[in-house]
Image 1: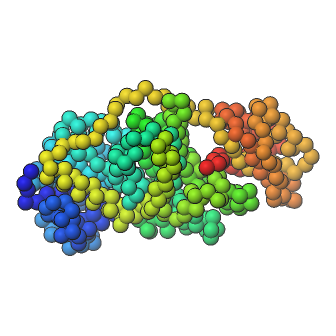
Image 2: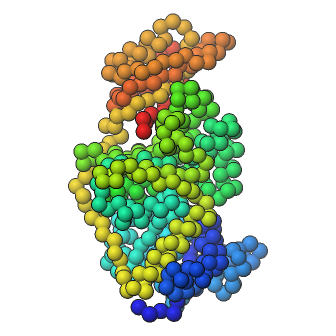
Image 3: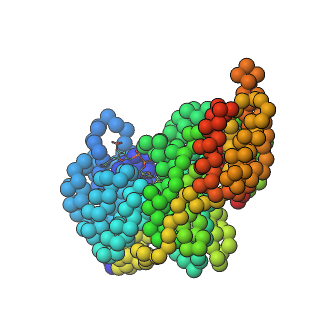
Length: 434
Ligand code: NDP
Ligand code: HSE
């Protein structure tokens, strides 16, 4: 199709949207060459127009609107780029763009994780592209590899550090011993954190990203509610110390495995061996280890958050959409809605556990705890008594188990917590020997 230019409508001018507008302006001629014609920003939808607010890069005032109809009725918009985030109205905006025949690009993991199946089907029906490279892994190419480069593989596992904010927080806590609020504040100032940082800290952002990746990898709709999810707020400075003494690092991992046609999907903190590749991924960096039958193991590594890296992925999607438009290609992505695979309940997973228990410092305490574990067929790999508090006559016990079923471990935890000699179970972290 011959076109003088490709028109872009941008929704949201925050961290991501602002940087996308900047790159489209600053790299206009290089991007025109890549795309096949100039990419022109035709309208920007913002929540409110505030002349006092510093907006990106001297964009002409007439580009801005707060009105949905004015945005969608602007002539010459071929691609709608959504960078507002959240479930609604983003979902409605994407549907409106698709049904009016526009290709769409989004950085919004929540909307794709929750409504990806619906939006993919709608995009196919209306012969337009739906691209969301920035929704998982920020600037790291991940969606395109799953859609194209890895399609000959049967994917058996994904092990991912996929949230930059929590990895940044855990790294600073582990390395510098700074406290959680200070590390979070710094991540927010750097533009890594979600508009609601609870989404990062409680593992929800990683959950959304895993839902997107697992759905592509296993060709089965994995919804956020199918994924067990636990955040990093319980991790204390002692856990880093004890883990290090045992030869482990602590990371928030998103894990998806395919075992006997059942999908296991979970997000939670884990102890991983200090010499593993993922243990060395620090700061805002993400790393995604993928296992496939042909490729073996492949590791994707890079900046998983931040305006610059994220804009790289969004702009790549815009250029790919523009190329498709010029070639007259509508939607070229195939995805089966129903694969016959099952989602494995969390109770059925099996892993090793690290347990930190604050208990009375007197004879027979370890025996009581061991009996509970033994009765549930959980084998102890090591037990170490850590700091003792002479005044309170308590001590801290750190236990590592051999691989055991989650269901048995949860039963053991509730029984141990009820022991008269146990003050509290201070922490409980799963261990992955990757
Ligand atoms: P921001 O909060 O910085 O930006 C969102 C912008 O959208 C804000 O400027 C907000 O306006 C605007 N907005 C909200 N609702 C509307 C609406 N109805 N109409 C028009 N504008 C609206 O978030 P980010 O840029 O960080 O994130 C955007 C998306 O990109 C999210 O889905 C996020 O998960 C994703 N993402 C973010 C990354 C990052 O590193 N920050 C990395 C990868 C993905 P106002 O300022 O008035 O509130
Ligand atoms: N808040 C997200 C993160 C942004 O920290 O990874 C990237 O999706």
